[in-house]
Image (tube, chains in turn cyan, green):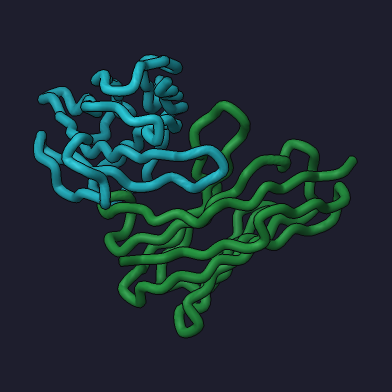
Length: 111
Length: 114
């Protein structure tokens, strides 16, 4: 079992650009959540996808959007990147009422 | 919304001694409290969790206690080993196991001194 996989592991973008991050959930999991972790901080909830719909959303602007595909994989899109968007982006997957497993994250640097 | 506070921010203990990390939460509706360990360059790894209908849970050298009245929960690591060095996060949620958002504490950097 590969667990939760995220791609890419690192990327550098210029302010104002757009970025797409990808996540494949753990086998058997149907729910995907995205978190942003700034340096030295705990992860902050962005949103959660279940059955291809956004089910919950944290306090993030509309520049952050997502998608879940029929195979349960998910994408996180961030438009009009700001320097403050630099962070580790974590994907977590779960199945119904099971614990959440995290991927290794994507380190985004905005310059 | 939920607010989770975690203390201390850094903790150094001698190998073999015990380490305790404490968290408080604000939302009385929270009923699921996981603890995650995060090593450098990796994502958080679930190490133990507890539900609100249980006061204590133990898994080998790791234990978690929950006081719902006081809204606080703690992680206890006994017989610490060098590989326990990492950042530990507590979290809280309303919905049980992972289907509701997790609100995390700010983390505790644990260093085990050989």
